[in-house]
Length: 187
Image (cartoon, rainbow, N blue to C red; front, side, top):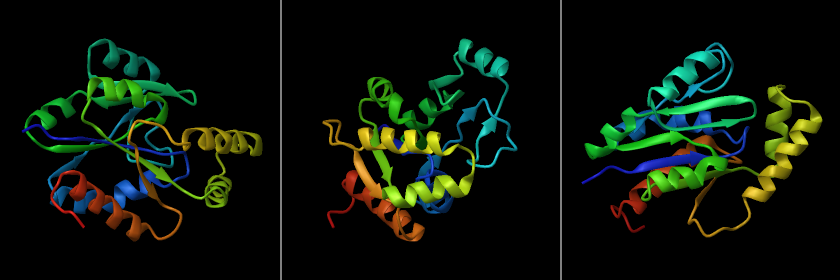
């Protein structure tokens, strides 16, 4: 039996990195591997636990087939290592920090992937983005408008998790969603 690709998406500031870090050990206990993505951003940058590489290194890896998935967003290149295919083939579930804009391509490669959208109330998202201090007010407003467009209902059966409040609740909700979607629990 093949494993499932769990494709976590959400707007910048929704708490994906915090959720991934808080859920890492419970996911591992459930047999789910969390894979670090490769980004053309310094490894010292504040944010997710990713592997930072130069644009040249990223291009070399892409050209050599080192990525199962890759995309460009917000001026950065992102890649998911091809090693996920081996883990999935060995029956292990794999969680990746994906891109909302790349979901269709990911679904084409992995038709059984489980798409999860981490949502957050607009006022909470605005406050998180302001506190982070990486973007101008205009850039933050543009992100919020883009988020509204993406969170509209669509037909791709995207599971939504609200991360507006307590992170531990969101972790529990994520673990429950994975159990239910695997048919292990009907509660």
